[in-house]
Image (cartoon, rainbow, N blue to C red; front, side, top):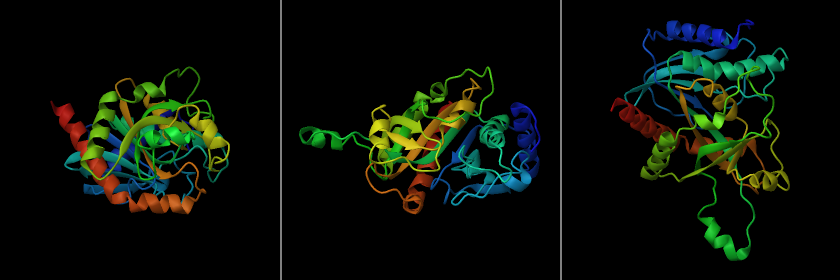
Length: 297
């Protein structure tokens, strides 16, 4: 991996993507980073893809990760041009050459290269676990309708940053990732969930480094006390990078794969996400159509 300044590395990667996929010089306004389940059956017309590790500069030390395809793809989603990354890089991954700085550089690059392709709206998707505090029996019925459940979508409206590991930023990059989360995009996401067979709630996201799961007995109640609705291992680093570009906005979407009290299982989380892949793909298509329609007015 070349030791280029982050923005130069992103420009280099974007140029290679344009050349390899034959994208020409026109900007691609919408980018999507696809988390577990979100990209399994996403149908793109005029589909083109390239391998991140072998074809995109900057990802030479990238490792394989189960359930993540590690591709950059271009295509038309409901007729709208999009660039999508299938299989994000996480801060908890160890590259073939063990170097945390390289991991952080790749986490940053995966987002920044999309921006250098002209993306102005980035949809950040993930799978996540539910968080909620125990309530008294008298209030349980009232709270049940508001509690996030397995199969729901959390439309992320803010972050708990206190527990995040070292970030993929450099000195002097003082920005607020929460401010990248556009209210208009959230409204689109919430309304489009109701037109399909999905339930969406607005809520906060807390990130832990992983890859070990948080404890159910003590960690989850403690994390829920922050006010967050879901816990995951991604999205916040990407929002950090988006925050460096004031003209780019983000939408964060978390598909809930596990409850706050059940035993953790990576395999079960993946199974649930794949089971919902058709619905999630349709949902993304409707959101992208709405965004494109709003921006054309």
